[in-house]
Length: 107
Image (cartoon, rainbow, N blue to C red; front, side, top):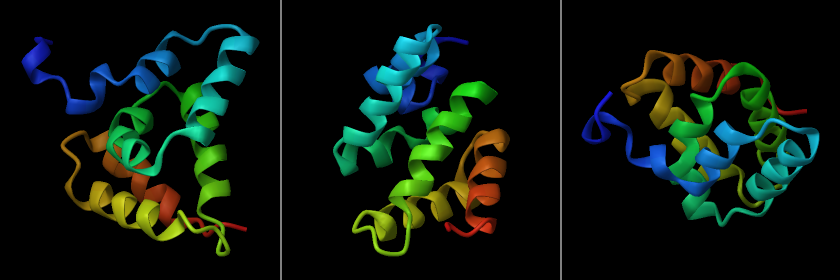
């Protein structure tokens, strides 16, 4: 795939660190980065994060579940972006994962 065909977030440092995380320590740092990512940047990175391989995608989901608890201030913005991705993402896998996330309520 040519660089111009990649999604805008494909070169995000967060997405790249997720792709490159292999060890437990690297994955732990990746989770910490997701947790502390400024909301605007996290929202922009969501398509790339939802497209990561399964194990890393599960780490992303763990953090997003925490951030979308009913009492969390970040919940509305994240749910709005996930709804948009579920309907409009170019990548069918991203659409499917966003839908799946929205169908399972946060506990």
